[in-house]
Each structure stands twice: as structure tokens, then as C-alpha cells.
Length: 76
Image 1 (cartoon, rainbow, N blue to C red):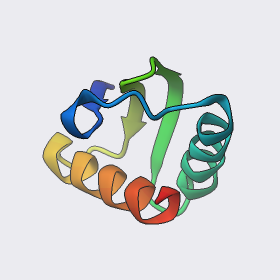
Image 2 (cartoon, rainbow, N blue to C red):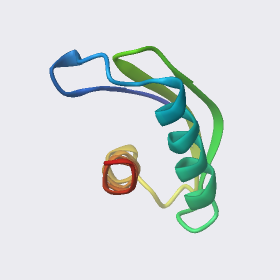
Image 3 (cartoon, rainbow, N blue to C red):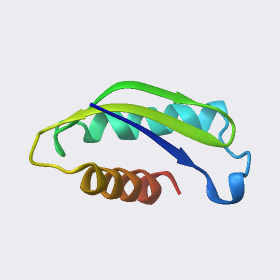
Image 4 (cartoon, rainbow, N blue to C red):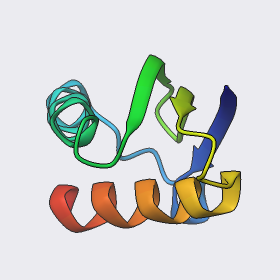
């Protein structure tokens, strides 16, 4: 289990309620495909918290890279 915190570029306040809903959908739809299970997803206006559980073969850095690339491509 890992707790990841992703800050937005330059800590800009760009996370709105609409973008948050889209981010939740992206994370939950990619959960099974990438074997990353979200136990908790929270946000502030300038950063996002993930509490994730993944298969033991994934390192935390590999999981982080995958998660950031998936959400960034689909969200923006």
C-alpha cells in the first residue's frame, strides 16, 4: 500500500469539481487494466492524494510513472 501525493505544475489551483469527477473516472476505469487499486482518492485545489494498492511486482516508482502518465494524457 502506498500513499502518493501529486502536486500540480507550479502548484496552480486548477482542480475544480468537474475535473475531479473526470479524474475519478479515469482512475477507476484504469484500475483493473493496470492492476492498481485505489483505496482512497482525495484532492485539494493544487494537489491530489492517492492511497493505492498494487501487485508486488510493481515498484512504487513504476506505479507512480504509470499513474501520472495515464491521468495526464486523459485529463488534459
